[in-house]
Image (cartoon, rainbow, N blue to C red; front, side, top):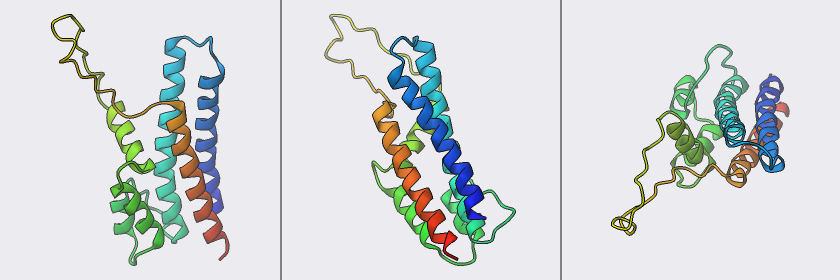
Length: 160
């Protein structure tokens, strides 16, 4: 059962990787095309994270529920499991891929912030809050970490 869910998670990760590769390779892409590819990759990473939670629930014989957070996953299971401990640690660790996805999700759910116009009077006072790192390199790091974790969970549960 874990392998079916692992395949679905892997599919989303592969599609995100494909979009990120297009961003890097297509120098002639317009700004809207590049933005669409980046947003598409981020959405696929977020979907893969949710599916990872479902995959873990299925690995532990929960056939019906679809947890959307680590808290919900923990509440579904009558006993503590190593996967939730790992995810909890990631969710509480500053700079982790889990927190990076939280930041990306929060930024995607808000309208773009208006930026101040730089003039001679305020050039020193302007501070640009760029939001979470949406670079291809940063997103590839998130993708790689998610891929490793999903594979480890699948291999662990395929042994049974």
